[in-house]
Amino acid sequence: MTSPSVPSEKGAEVGRRIGVGLMYGLWKPRVLGAWRVPTTGPLIFAVNHAHNIDGPMVMGVAPRPTHFLIKKEAFVGPLGQFLTGIGQVQVDRASTDRTAIARALGVLESGGVLGIFPEGTRGEGDFASLRAGLAYFAVRGGAPIVPVAVLGSSERPGRLIKALPPLRSRVDVVFGDPFDAGDSSGRRTRKALDEATERIQKQLTAHLENARRLTGR
Image (cartoon, rainbow, N blue to C red):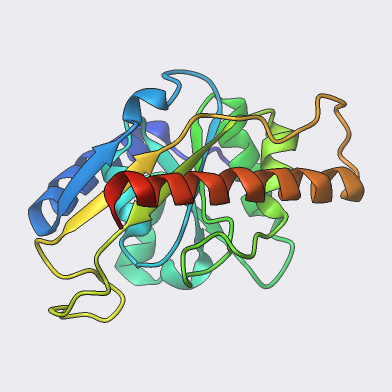
């Protein structure tokens, strides 16, 4: 049995360039803290998730090409082929998707950037409920986490589509300082991952609060 292929970094770079054009064409991104993102080495972007544009927005404005874990339901027809072509990772959220896990770890092993919505699905975007997947990839892949807050303007009227901010409105993307989720012990037990998840949640919540103060959101 052959191992799953690692998503294409060239494809993710193409996706980044497409994202730049779309995001700056439809909205007004303001990017803060991009200089905090390490320029090389494995990395995880932990992104809050309130709008459908959060992934494409980060993909477009991040200083490095990003491979996001995206629910398999999005991989339908031409869109599925497109997402695969730009290096995104299909994941079945209803099961332990070993193929997706292997591909995501492959991204980190090759020194790439993995994008994760640690809350698992779109919601309030406040990092209130994290799943253990982020801690697993951070500890297993030996990758620092960069918290990313995407703060849109969904509270304002004028949205043509409910899950999107109003067109041409400002969307702030705030990158935080990288941090390690593990405790330097190398443990990968359930208890160690639970402890790592608690540490991660504190860091992400603090970053989100700081981003809101910084942007006035």
